[in-house]
Image (tube, rainbow, N blue to C red; front, side):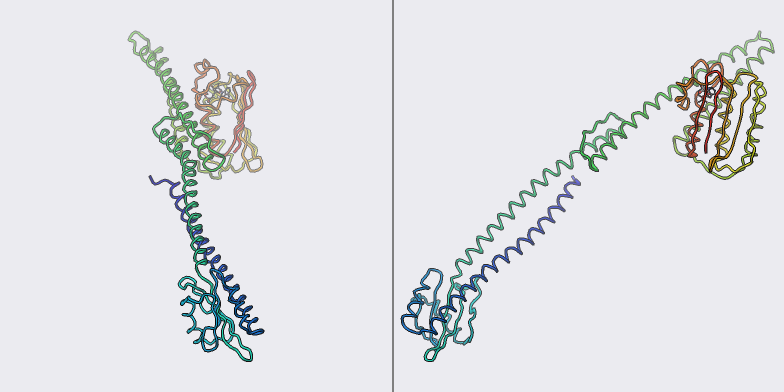
Length: 452
Ligand code: ADP
């Protein structure tokens, strides 16, 4: 599987290994160099000492003394004259020591110095120290066996190898742990989203942490809960809708059957037919509102705001509703002194006001008044629709904008209505970025205030 943790770990792994190799190489080189340098300077210092003593006091016993001092395992000394003849050596039978003499004679160096520094390939590193007094001249040669240096290098290489291998193992362990810690919640989330896509919204994700992964997990959990709520709401909504539609349809069928009776006189038939027409009209409104809601939900619904004048707009609405108000013996007063510019979608705003006025009309008693008032407040347009109707109980005000919510189901039969109008109003106002408020007193009337 092409897991994200694998990719992450591989990058991390490669970076650490490269860094480690680089550091190890650097350290390895430096340690060896400084150790070898130390050997060189020790060799040079000793050779210098012997040479000084020899110049000051050139005698058989001094030479013996020098040779005796260097009679150690890994260090040798040889004293030769200016012709290259060996005067004395700490290891008489060692031909290797002699083999360096020709190169001393060839160089004829006049100052102290390292003759052989290649500790990797030569058995000794060698320093040369020329001496000269009135009678004698020649060279003191100092030899340091490279065995110990090479041994040190080997040990160091081995230690570095062990350290490198250990760190690789540690990185592998870290990788295993990290990939578990990182991948497990991701796998949980993947499974959760798969369940969601199959329509199973019962998803529980364990708490992860307070980082991005945790946030993602919380978001998925919230998404699942939202989807479940939406599904429940949709089912309830559909159930209510079918109920809403089936009730008037039952009436329609009933009245149609009655109207079809042969023995019915013309007047009664007309009466029943007008009831049928009224019911059908109500259903048409309901379906239209439902379509609006569906479009709002689908987001295919757009609000195109533009500037238009308030006076002609309100006059038009007044004309549209005037006759139905008169039919119910209600008086509609338009209160808007100044003509100002409104910035909104005029068709949608008209729909909002028609819905509010329709409610005001439905829930008003005969011979009362209804006010439609509009004014400008700062940059916003305020429109009020007030009636002197039956009012809304205060504990139900918060629900009236919910879909299919009706105060007392029995009211709807008396007054008509399906509980959709105000939810459409609410969505439309929201789509405008506006607000809607209600004030109502039971038995005294209600005021709806739209601010856009
Ligand atoms: P409906 O189609 O039933 O009127 P609405 O969504 O428009 O549905 O209104 C929801 C409920 O709010 C209504 O059932 C009604 O009881 C109440 N309501 C709305 N407007 C008024 C009003 N002006 N006066 C009294 N009650 C109202």
